[in-house]
Image (tube, rainbow, N blue to C red; front, side):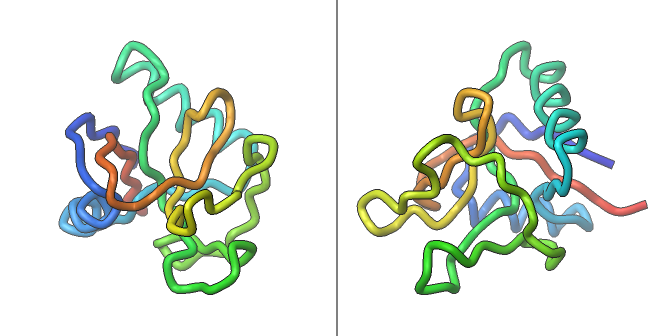
Length: 119
């Protein structure tokens, strides 16, 4: 079950909201899952706004070690060209809909989000 939340929250607050609902920020492990989540956002919002998903490297020194907040294996590679780049040294959270890609951004900004809860 997926839920698009248009309210503006930090990544941490968005993850907490998803956990309150019994889930996490969304993870995706294939192009089909990624496309499904993009289309879910478009259907709900009428466009493709940037939104938080569960990818993050908040606990890692290296920008190359990303994980999903739900604990599943991080195996997605559809980053925008040149990303993740950790610009400014604090881009530790993932947003979807940076063009047709995902992007690393600072976790303290406010954005909409996508939650997922298991069956």
